[in-house]
Length: 214
Image 1 (cartoon, rainbow, N blue to C red):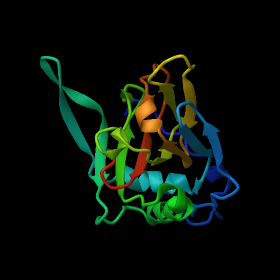
Image 2 (image 1 turned 180 degrees about the horizontal axis):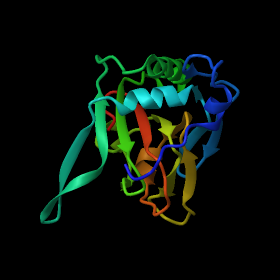
Image 3 (image 1 turned 180 degrees about the vertical axis):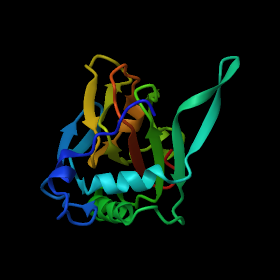
Image 4 (image 1 turned 135 degrees about the vertical axis):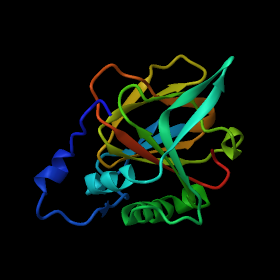
């Protein structure tokens, strides 16, 4: 990696007496941003405390480097990947706690559970994901949710409406921050982690999804 990871100032402040990694309360703390066309995002900075411990654990899992077809060439996917099915144990107890808390908080609104956990490792500013919506499954036709817990150095999650006519929104996410994209967000808006020339450290995103939402 070309950049040095900078730990969370909150974790450094609590060093020596910090509680075990885990998540805080959602009700009354998370903020909903209403977008257009029935889309919304919920945001809660620093939801997963002790995030540096979780981040260090995840750095050691068996990440996969993928390749994909692009026009006439096969190119490297500019990030590392790992996917956990619903029957797989997550690599840190704090992530299991996070999934349970999300399921409890969104049970009535979502009507089902978050089951899978996809993970992406952005090693530096050259790693990215292009503009897209998670529309390979049911979210191409139905409202759903994707909940993302971000660990490590902050990177901007950018959002823009597919129909245009709205400024791009940017949410700097890292160090245990939570964002939940809901309503029609996957169909009517796009999101991306864009490349940056700035010196940024590694970031890991953990994406909780219901079954058949990808």
